[in-house]
Image 1 (cartoon, helix red, strand yellow):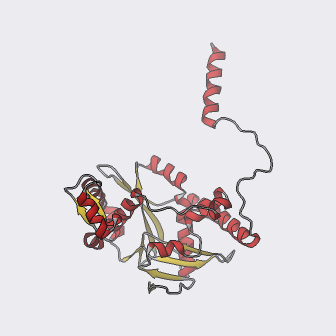
Image 2 (cartoon, rainbow, N blue to C red; image 1 turned 90 degrees about the vertical axis):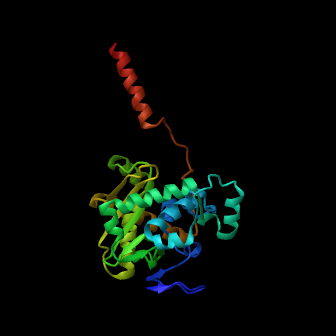
Image 3 (cartoon, one colour; image 1 turned 60 degrees about the vertical axis):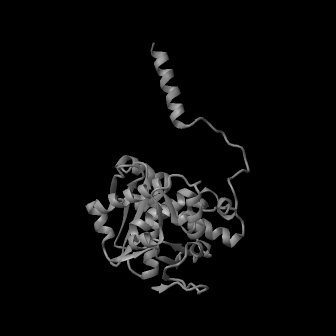
Length: 285
């Protein structure tokens, strides 16, 4: 493991701590979010727009810092507990000194504090985050099958090789979070992170856990481990994306959707089922 230094060369199969976010995201490699875009279409990855951090993203970073690096959170963040509006002069003055990502108004500060307290009070979640380890390590490797360079940044990596990932969610219950796993492709992340960890260290990841924490009071918290079938499907999908990415690099072609022919399109399946059910009812009358 190496500590980041400005303008340092990033070797393959390395682990870097304290790497700034902008440096990590600017690295010439592909991450899980890039693989998601590749599977939509290579063009969506190649011609993606640079996005400035939204307020939701800044709050997400604050939550991660509060949970994974509470001492750093207490030291670096400014909590304006008496300021309710970001349009106030007090908020703008604080932002001019500390930056918007480090300044929270009353509702934001209360929300982050509530989520922090809920996770630390959860016996399983707090035990995982209490294990010796490191937050926000940057890891770089070469895919052994295609040779393309990849990167990951686990939220928390224990010294025993377990990966812990924080997921802010609207509903942490099993059925709801299962849908989030499918919608946001968290199973792809789990498989990809575990495999890249092995490529970097030469050892298998001990485990991968999600800590799902609800954004709104009472900030209910659950800890989940994906089953083997979900991991296998995630591995299939990231492998498909990596192979497509390698082919695009080799050919120089970054195609969008297949638009060489016209297609038949229909209403969504749920709408078709509703129509069919109505027809059955009408025919039965």
